[in-house]
Image (cartoon, rainbow, N blue to C red; front, side, top):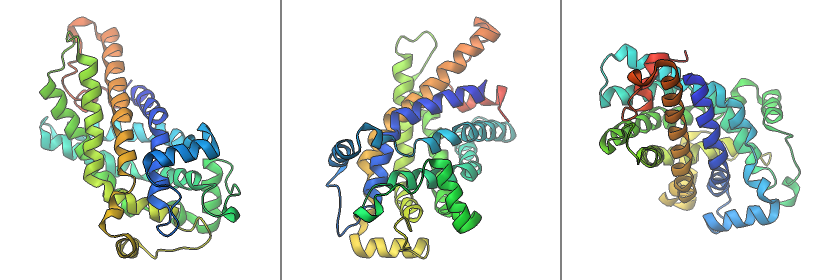
Length: 305
């Protein structure tokens, strides 16, 4: 049940937020010498004008493809970690979320690599505008054939650095907000409260790790034109700082935060409401779970792993 709820909630989040993610990646990796976009809204307009609305959904196959596995890992690990930790405290919520974030990187990193490469297709000079990849799976296969497992896992270290604390903050923030807002089953404002808590949790998570995401995107997009610009994480940080200053670590932040709120509002609210409905059907009104507890606090009752 948790597995199905996570898949439905994750799918809702991907559909809502992928256009914002495409804009974020384009802004993060564009050339500082010849920028294609002046900002978030100009990037949106340019993509729609040049590539139609479908351009905003480039690379969506990769996150959809990894959705089932990622949600199974996240919900299963988080639920089982909360069981092992025993007590439901804010610290344990953070630790359980961090554990889930760490484990799911195995799927997340290759998925985001394919997504980034697909999103970068058709950008830059005319010679690079031909389509290199048919779809996300074709992208991963081509990278594997050229670079092996190391190529498939490009950006793994930065993904770990981003996801481990990011998921900890994510689940901690949702738990604290739902408790503070006092969400109750008979509250007429329960759904708006869940949407607000989920959206703000997403924003808090991104703000806590965004500079690392910029470096990850640059490393995963490196080599798209056939030439590798960075030799590693430190080199990427050094070159980025030298060419663009500290503001490089905020590039695409507006698009990311605009995306984070609706995506995570949709994801958390969908999952929480689905679990409430299904458990109400199974257990009856007397055993109805309390939505003021975070989704992850409900997980140990029926973990997917």
